[in-house]
Length: 612
Image (tube, rainbow, N blue to C red; front, side, top):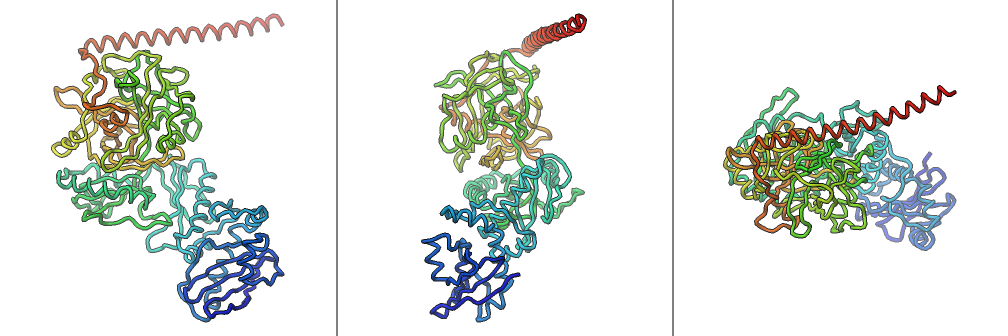
């Protein structure tokens, strides 16, 4: 039972203090009439104390054992008059409960140690139920630091309780800002988690709205003038948008603004160039953020559901002569949630002016979240550490990391996350071939600069191909060169600005990160346009422009990859067949050796029992 008792008045007529007796503890509140605010809430240790506000203000600074201030900042009442307490008793009761929820015992344990730990750093024991959380949201405002603390802790506990959950966010529906719901994202399809007394909205990355997939199949050309205008708009606004709206997974452009889409694929879309925001769940806004803008510098915006996933996977064949498109593996601490070391695709080869013959791939294929974070802050990899890389897996070493770059990018340069590996323990294929196929080869060393890619987008539907370790040869088409994504790698949130977007059904999948993407034109050698980073749930992959990758690795103009001898198709086919026969023979020898070892053990076991 809570007793609300006036505690006393101050010398002036503008402030009052009041005492609340709750569960054998006293809370003292100071209100300011002229400013319509509650200035202080104090917890008093001794329930029999008659200490006043002025004494509390002095004593809690000199003697923390006497009391503790609960309110981290002022909070404003919407109305005030002489009967404010009578009119706002429920409000003050909520403030009282706030003290309980912040775990008074936790406060006192820290007070005894003389620690003045900020509210946000407390290990909160008791959390408010939905009704009380919404009441506090109405009282303190959804952007309150305390609301953020509670919501973060609730999200963390939900994620710990359910292994299938990869992310949880507190959110609200526009127009219902004081009713908090929790958005639960899972990687695979599963039953919606049942969370007691928590309203949730469940989404699987692979089971979001089909709106984006439907729209992207019907895209039309956007004029060069409009593309340039939108590119300038995104260059000016992207970083600010990502900072203000943390639920954005990608920012891109489209020739279609979607309206009224439903599960049957029916919509009232209009063909008008627009800027597109992709989010995990439409219609739900992070609790301490505002809604996305519907207009940016004269261009309409569209919101669609979508997610981006880096394409890493597991390991397979060993190649004595390393090829573009091989599956590779990096540092042992770069693991998935199950503890498996992640792998991706070897991109291409370069002759580096300092390190000689090297290859490269996406950084998230090789490096852990901690390594990428450190490199993004300007910390170099330490040569004293083991920087070995393997093809396809440990212990089949083929080189070591000599350079890593993790840059988010800006208006003048696309974001890059790349690792360069010096080839040390293997030879490389000298004919620009890919594993298991003679259909394509990249021998020219040619690349396309960013201006050349943009020119192709503006003039034609530009088709591209790639060879990935997981999906092999696939075909797609370029959509734009101004897509930005913010993705998770372990615990790291990493942004890549101004990536090239490629549309193609199953153009790439997990295991293809790091693969080269090529522009192909009839009777012309392949030219590299970029490196695959990952993909979305609506048949779109993001590619870092190759010119940005090569510049970040310290190559000087004219930029190019390593060139190889152009070998005729029939010769490539013959050499590939010889390699396959060689691999089959080695596999046969290994299996025979293992069989003989097993047979020997069986013979010993049989002999033992016969003697017995």
